[in-house]
Length: 263
Picture 1 (tube, one colour):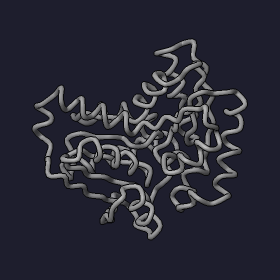
Picture 2: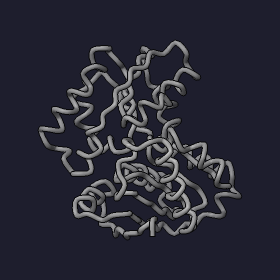
Picture 3: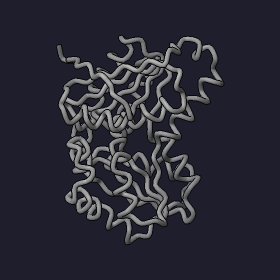
């Protein structure tokens, strides 16, 4: 079983991509909706939450862990990798790989939560591969709550996105990394506001491709995974809006099972 966790609804974009790429594989998802967003929390808190999330997924039979949260990927990946004897994937490296492949002028923008942007993880990974690249980052703390509330089509969301993107637009970036798995839900708004010439990088598809290649290269791991096409969804809090948005992202009716990791 492939285990995927996120602070809220954003990780469902990763679930959708993995379902598309590996439709026969069993998936278990945990969305920590009671404690979202992770981007406003301290690094120590995010690490602790990520450990709890991973322990829950392992208890449900996960043999591979996917950290479908940019904030957790930036501050908790190494801790999770060290603590759990399982393959662990994060969403940052696939986005960097794709951005470096797509950029034409090596002027790359990154948007994300404050936690992700302040970590500097994207800048470090990009410069490790391409030191001459120019990277411009902007924290966008209001976007996660707007997505969680289902405000993707509201004029307020378009106005806020425009304001956040303005500093990147004037620097003439040619590639924009969506440094939060919530942001693909409003990718159409972001693409419109940043302009047609800027390539939008969504790591979920690249990540799904990496997992598929890994399972091809390591058949012993592949053999441990269930292949009944079952996907289970767990959340730490169920709201009507979350149910509605989740169905929109996954594109089918799904059942959300509430769990209390503190109990």
